[in-house]
Image (cartoon, rainbow, N blue to C red; front, side, top):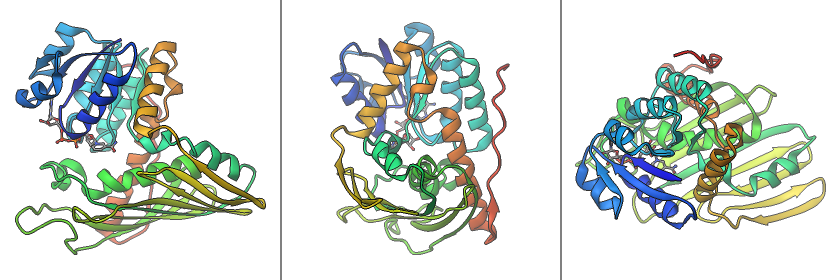
Length: 332
Ligand SMILES: NC(=O)c1ccc[n+]([C@@H]2O[C@H](COP(=O)([O-])OP(=O)(O)OC[C@H]3O[C@@H](n4cnc5c(N)ncnc54)[C@H](O)[C@@H]3O)[C@@H](O)[C@H]2O)c1
């Protein structure tokens, strides 16, 4: 399969390393508006500064869209409309309109579309779901705190959605994967600069606390922080069911520990989740089965709707209902 990468930054480098390890995958082309970056990542692959030209000349079988959130819609929709499989980095987009356009394009395309929320690909998630089966879910407690790379678009709320979209959306997506639909949120953001320094400050929050209400009556929270380089990260999810207390440790070790119906659970993941998600994407593409991917465009659009409600809740201080997704439109 001939594969191209659009956007040759931080996450693209991680994907290029994975692609080079996979049998039957040829990284054929790399595009970035900064051609120097594309060249650095490309190795023997062709280099482009314009993704349309790449699609026209290379006709790849699959593309990895690794651009900042405001630049997700155009290449993702165009590639899907050309029947090219798309692995789209998370979040699906910056805003709901772009997300809807991508969901619609995925629905009318024969190609596969996966979104890169890799925690859905954590192996022990199956064990967590099995341990909860038949029980009432009561409470989910998610924490995501640690250093990350600063990028210009990330420091701009309008461009990247700040730590809510960049970081909390991972925890919200995982909470939805375990607990089902979220119907309303409350949220507040801190004003303390934990990681941003005076010389490099945007208009985004460094810490936020979010309260979630699920359709099934469960409640949950996601607390996030961007911390300074060198501090240890904390990424985890606690889940309390009617007969279980379970703890999912996330990154760099992925483990599931706890007790369900008197049975002790202690399971470890062997496969790195981003690579597992990418492998599943190619498997789905080979079998022509879009539903096989760990996170579909519609899944990720649902997560974006929750993040958008959190943004509104921070602004207003009120509890905000999550907007329902529109059914996918198949005609352009
Ligand atoms: N899954 C994860 O854990 C994870 C981790 C990091 C980033 N991401 C996501 O990946 C995406 C990219 O993030 P990043 O950290 O790699 O950003 P980055 O800023 O390091 O890289 C983005 C690159 O895209 C290029 N670009 C921008 N517009 C373009 C266009 N129209 N055509 C071609 N290239 C263009 C930029 O020049 C830049 O080199 C974001 O959506 C981010 O949320 C996901």
